[in-house]
Length: 385
Image 1 (tube, helix red, strand yellow):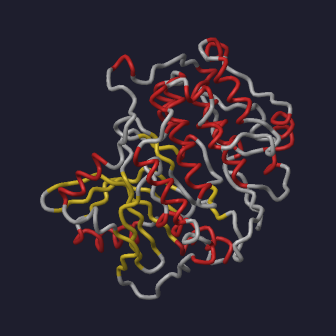
Image 2 (cartoon, helix red, strand yellow; image 1 turned 45 degrees about the vertical axis):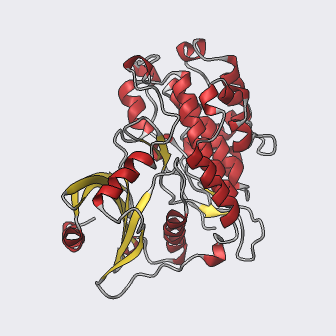
């Protein structure tokens, strides 16, 4: 984002109590900033994703992704999905204010601390699967699940973020349809996507969950050939994911078994998020057997709202020719006062069960050697849907 536009955005939001601190993420048409919101003398840290629709080229294909991201962001409410407080629009710029993730993303956490213990990986993947199950119940798929898009809060909970490639699994007539866009990050991409044929999005999210679990435990990507699509596809179908020896030594057979089911190259045989959540491995931690109240309520709401959240009901997003600031979404209940907002931050987003707060029960390093450092992930090229 150029400095002039950045300054303009900051100036129009400062009277409302927002202040931009620094840039913490950058993309082709979106940047993420750490921000703070001040009201009634109380300051709340947040993150702001700024979408530049003037940077997507103006073509219908690119705008389709922006429209989906904004609509899905505005219509998903789950404790394991990063919460959106408000969305503003000024001309072709959209500002999404989200819950702050104090410990960054899982990738950076692993680089700094090394692979996590199995119980932490269980906790985090269980939260991730809970969020995915909610999305799938709404006939939505994420399509870019990876450790970079799992954000860690101060209580070591993970939240699913970034819906830039998310889409509905229904067409405009409400009928099931296959995905045809080649998107996501190569090391986390399912074999059916690499094959280049229309695919069911839900099993591809599950495959990515398996890759995430592998990376958490090994601090490395599951397959070697991440730059050669043909070789990667062959390795995936041959199940040639290679464990770090020290990680495998301390990993339960139940975990190895569930990994095999998540990374099943046949999408028809691959387990679902619901089956993962009910697996023996997840149930090894009694605290994770039942949904939290917030998760239960979100899932119940998903059952009720399935008919309200459909592709043909999406609001069309158009850049405004006027430079006036518009409020596209704002949660009135949460913005009643700064005190209420603080209470929401404490109560809504940090639901039990939480990882134990004692130092000895925090994520513990299994090993941290040069050979286990995760490789850089690549954004796969897109083909027109």
